[in-house]
Image (cartoon, rainbow, N blue to C red; front, side, top):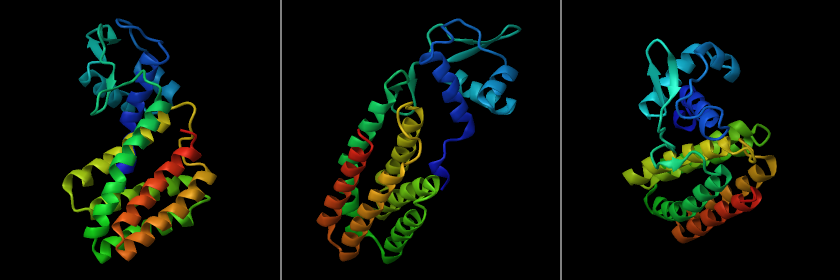
Length: 231
């Protein structure tokens, strides 16, 4: 399940990045606070700050000036991640964009998975559905199980691109939700309850071998989540 979690150093790097690009606390050429100060403010160890700074140096956001400290570069990179999505973008809109991308990708993926999945893979998918349903009161666990369910469906396609793309999608969506100040970082109870119902519909059609039914159920599952999250 490790793909579901953003490494601490990346989360810290994101926090520093937001200080620069969203909060405008540090302008190009400004010196950022010391490791000790940042560690205290963000609530992490100095080691985590050091690792995060290395990441931002590699991305061209920060630079070290020997004997002076760490500074925002003169022309910092304002994009984030593999897709180069602007850091200053409204992340609520970005969450919606990710859901819209899911609508393009996942109904087709579950159609393929329904035709390709082994009995063992179907059991794995259903295992995560049951795990999610059993943790409606603990929605952090629910979110882990929910993401693993979608990743298991991707693996059942036996398509190496989809297998790698869906975990990346899940991580990116979780990170966009975390960054949005106007969204829940974990799934609220009403959304989770509706997701359990639609998960069961997807698996029902997969068990029947009804690829089109599973595809329609997946599209409804995603659209329902968008509606519940007010996207």
